[in-house]
Length: 370
Image 1: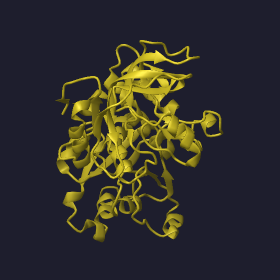
Image 2: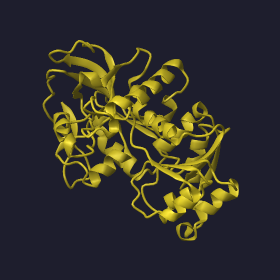
Image 3: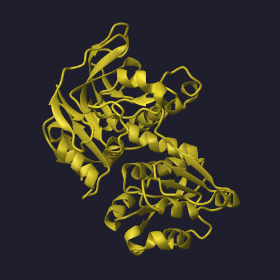
Image 4: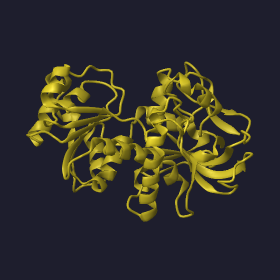
């Protein structure tokens, strides 16, 4: 089968022919109709976060079960499924309390692991979904209805990441929030979910005015845009982002959802919070914030949010099935696996508006939804 493989020290995926995986006891093999390419996946690879290379990347997928291993009664061959990529022991205190991403054995299929105890599970399911077929645990798939497209099913994971972040924020009714890097997939997911969580006002922060207008169109009744390019070239030194947010929200926003992976924007956005406000941080920004005395004085809650749980994805699946949300509008690009280099370039360079990027391992056409 054809697979997109990552090698140490490289920044482009290699397309290679490798063996189709066989179903082991407790596993299924899925023919991958839809996978995805994400900036977070690429960044982890470039930072050397994958301990075992080469490997097939990819952690979001939907497709058709083509083989079941010994002992598997559900799903069955021919079932249409989405793959839940967060794998864990399923028995520890975290797994039993809807927090499986903190399980000592937590690993993400075709992606990252989160500690040395995860290595056995990581090795067992090393290769990911940017391939024509993938082997996964039978318990880690959800059967999807005929009316749900594979593209939508594959991207449930991203929306569920937003659900987890919003749940952790514990927002008051009619909250005012700030979203940094609002033009990315996580920022757009938060905007897309805003009405479901009773949000009353959104200040969407991004570098490009043009891209921010596209994000605004997802919820025009809620979103105001704030472009970093309008703050002056030295905004990071002057604290202009904090000032601009407070000009619009004098008392400060109830919450900040931060997706900036570098620079002083994270600290400036959090500094705009009202007293007793909440910051949800989801990007590994190494730039220093501020003295802890500032946090104490303002009573801020700074909360990390990582990934999503199976329960989060089930909520999103229910909303999609009921027509409460539509993921289709967030899919901006589609590629065949043979054109994976173009998908990587698009996600890495972002020279055009990009939210969700889909890859079709068993398809041949390239098309853009935006």
